[in-house]
Image (cartoon, rainbow, N blue to C red; front, top):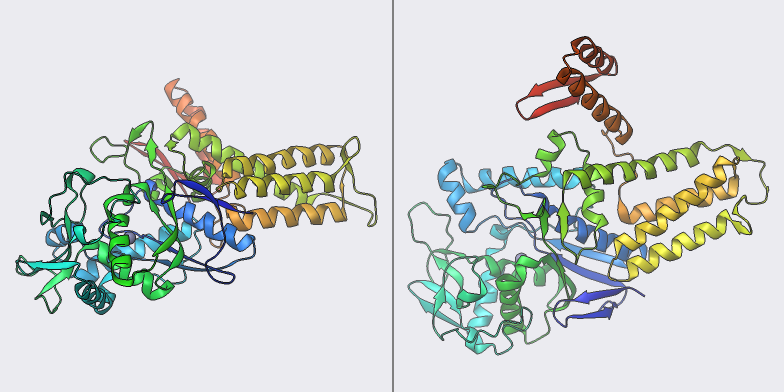
Length: 477
Ligand SMILES: [Zn+2]
């Protein structure tokens, strides 16, 4: 039985869908004003693992993720770019989709955009209005927090300092600034994106879109709402106030929040120069599969300290897994009907697979403890390698091992050969090693050796490019 930690109750709870066999999931998606960083991708990979594991467990999944295509940050970026709103956000939405695909994240069933759902948001505001939860001020519409006594339950905010009627207009703010928040923002400057409404020309506040779109696609009550922990307050708190304030029903059963990602022990920031997008890492020569593997290998409720040492370590453990799969595929089959080979005394390959499967499932059932689940898989790699060292595998054992790897990979998504991906992890490791040796040769002023390495790589179709940031490489087309 799958158990998930629920931010709302702060408890580990047995998971059961609200209705039938379908799990309805919503994840807060990206704000499309730039290439998003690996901290955000940690969240999207974690949600992907969640929805893949629910499918592994036999559930149907209905999954929606929004695209925020109008907010304070976008409007700032838009002014600088001189582009139209659609051009500007369309470009970054495309980049985001490409990144998801490279990370082998399965596409949500729907990816609604905020600006395509203004009527739904206006309808929701009208319902809030009817329940006396809103008030107008200077052409904007605000949510009256006082009207919703449950406010603060998710984040544990006491809101003692909150003054009735004090307002906040920005899309993001912290607990110290808890105030009545804006639902509809009056247009302030000429040329800002704006839509007509009964309150006057304006645009929706950020929080409103997620309530309106999640309820449209998943129903007024649904199973799991996901996001990074930075969204608990105010975003998710405000979503609850908006949805429950309008429907009077419980909005979400389980709140699933993914912890922060630190880079080399520090908070990521552009100023510190430790801010990485997926593209930055791929340019440095790391494979998206290894990046996905690192992002998912730390349980989602634990802080992940991203370091390049760790990325290289994960890359090589992923290679071990990939090489193992190739080795099993290529293993000589013993005569069919042969008794399964033993991995140790009185322990068959089938026993080893069974215990790896139990360990994998026990780990995943424990609030998606991917680290425990992976340990089970690597135990099997060790056991079967031992069996293969002493001969072949029976056809049955071979098939059973490959079936197990496939089922595990339906959740992990790191073993498949992706279309168009001709850079294997193996090649990558070899190239990285040769680049290191070439650096060493050049440092020792052994230029003949350095050139030899460059030629060797060229023969394998690898082109090197020396830049101020180090040596980059790519495959010759
Ligand atoms: Zn949201």
